[in-house]
Amino acid sequence: MPSLTMLAIGLLAAAAISFAVVVIRFNRKRRAIVRAAAAATESQLEAIYTLVEGSSTLPAAGHVLARTNRRSTAPGCIIPIPEELPGFPWAGRRIEVAVAKEVEYRFIEPAPGAPSLLGKVVRPVRVPRYRTGRAGTTRNAFAPEKYLAACPELRAALAEVSPAYPTELLAYLLCIGGETFEFEPINQARIGTSAAWVQSPEHQNCGECGKRMALILQLPGTAISRKHLHEGTFYLFGCAQHPEQTSSVAQFG
Image 1: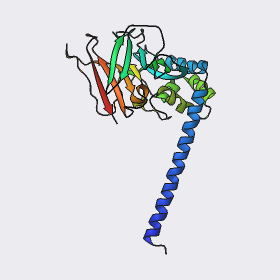
Image 2: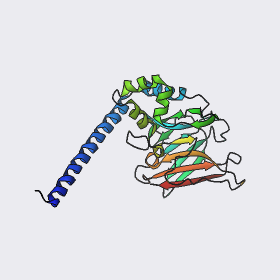
Image 3: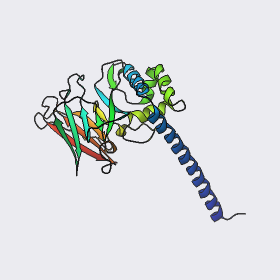
Image 4: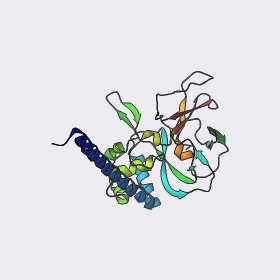
């Protein structure tokens, strides 16, 4: 009979082989999705984002920034806030995000141009909003599965780009902070809506009136710096009654 030591070694070897197989399959799938997204035409991506927005049954309260294959000549990170957000006092303003020892936010003069992060143009996609439950509560929806359930045409548009992995492709497109097909809210860049916290929520209150502030921006570290702060997600909040009152938070995983 084999000794217990030999059995243990055999079990560990089998576990290691199984783990390696899973990792290889994961990376193969990830590379296929990244290549498909990089090969997508602008019209294909625009069709996908238009269908996501069209799945909403209520006016949007904010945006996520989604991938495009366009390059930007603008330096750093420049994010114009879309003008269409109701009751959002920063709508139409433009924010420059600078990274030194900390992440800094500056409101700058409006100018034409698409949002850009580290030389890449991103597309603001209106976050679908639905009524849920008997009470008719309104909620933002971020998960790709929700969009696909609400819009059958969306799956066909995604399958045109990635026939094998349409749902995973959508997660990759909408989570610009990670090179993975797994939907992870902290990898999203958001304008308005609600924060996806890395740790416990750190809601901010206005120093002027004491009311809870609204989310202006959520940005994953990988989207705003090539070298630093990659483990962090960064948040900018502001007071709707006193728009010049802002507060920033950083959380690290």
